Structure formats: C-alpha cells, structure tokens
Length: 262
Ligand code: SF4
Ligand code: SF4
Image 1 (tube, rainbow, N blue to C red):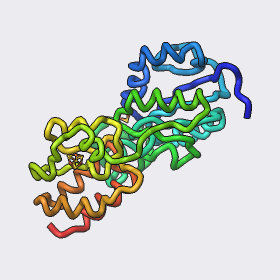
Image 2 (cartoon, rainbow, N blue to C red; image 1 turned 90 degrees about the vertical axis):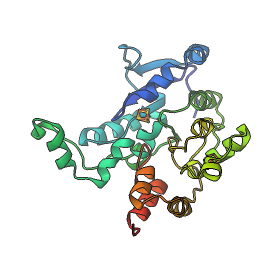
Image 3 (tube, protein in one colour; image 1 turned 120 degrees about the vertical axis):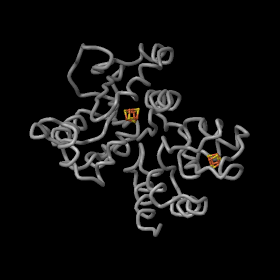
C-alpha cells in the first residue's frame, strides 16, 4: 500500500512505568535525524499537541489490565497501519503479570483504602493477546539501539535487524567469564534474548531475563540446572517470575518449578 510522504507516528501507553517511552525520548540525536522524515501525531509523554488518526506507525507501551484497556487497544489497532509493541509490559504483561497467579481482589483490599473504586481485570496480558501486532520489541526497558533500528527499518521499508540469539552468545563475544560455570550463579542468559549487551554477567551477576525468552529457549532444562545448583523450587519460580513472568516460556518454567518437590 503506498505511504504518505511523511509517515504519521503515534505512541500510546497502557499499564506501564513509562520507562520504555523515556527510552524513546532518550534517543535525542537519533530522533532528530528522523524527525524531519516523520510527523509525530500523538505522543503525550512528549507533547500535548494531539492529531487524530489514522497513523502509519503506532508504538504501544504497557499491558492490558482493565476492561477500558481492552476497548482502547482495539481502537488503537484500527487506527494503526503498523503496530509495534515496546517493552516487557506490552510484549509479555510486565511485572504486573504476577497478578495472574494471585487473587487481585486480595491485592486491592491490601493496597487501597477504598478497593470498591478499583476496576481492574484479574490478569495483565500482552497487547498481542487482544489484537494483531506487527512487531514486538522486547526489554525492560527496551534497547535504544534496537528501537532506532526497528523505526529506521519501518521508514526504509525493510525487515528490522534485531537479533534473537541468547545472552550467552553476547557473553562469548564480550569474552565474559560465564557466572554459571565459574561461580555457580544462576543465570537466565541461556534462555533470554540478547539486547542488553550482557551487562549483568559482565559484572559477575546472573542475567535477570529483562529481554524475555529468545526464540527457541530450553527453559525446562535450565530449571533442572538451577535445581542442580542448589536452588529451591520456590527460588526457581522467583527467578522466572519477574518482568517477563507472563511470557509463555518463562511462565511454563515457573509452573514446572512450582510443581517440584523441595
Ligand atoms: S517494560 Fe519495563 S521499562 Fe518498559 S514500561 Fe514496562 S516496566 Fe517500564
Ligand atoms: S553468564 Fe549467563 S549469559 Fe553469560 S554465558 Fe554464562 S549462562 Fe550465558
């Protein structure tokens, strides 16, 4: 389909901490380079000027946690030619997906003085659970480099070059000593998509899985490796239930560990 000369870009937020939008704002130099090539039609974190859709490129941050979100994301999808979800919240449900294993009514009673005013779903789910998504950019927060690559690829009408290999590959490239092998430290690097530059292992810490599962993760085996390292099932569950707890591979691994004998 032919595009207008200046693609119209919009950014929408759902349940999130705004960190991924801040990553977008942090791309100052790169954004200046593309600013002349696009029209920012709706980006309320950056400007109060709002222009109605339809939009060529829509970036969505955040997970779906209310009935209102469910309706709004359908409206956003109907206005978007290309829908790009950014961050662990939008692509996996975020840290707030921990509610998926809990009693939300109990949470609201514990947190709010008037829980009767809270209207929320029992689950936090990724955008892709509700509408078709054209590309998912992982990370908590997303990588500026990967974001610029995806937006540039869209503007150039080509496929984005975002690697889907594991963090382990990045460790090997950097020459980082493996914390599992050398120290017996649990690390999610073998099942996590690269994008951070393998920062944590380079400081002798295990990977926390911020970028979510890579394409072909063998998380079931990693659960057994963690148990061999002496971790309790409870701690294995905790390792997999963080920012990307709702991503299928991490969710299944955590439930696998949950079913293990102490
Ligand atoms: S993915 Fe992480 S940084 Fe991005 S909005 Fe969600 S919590 Fe914030
Ligand atoms: S430290 Fe973690 S990410 Fe790096 S090679 Fe070892 S297991 Fe893989």
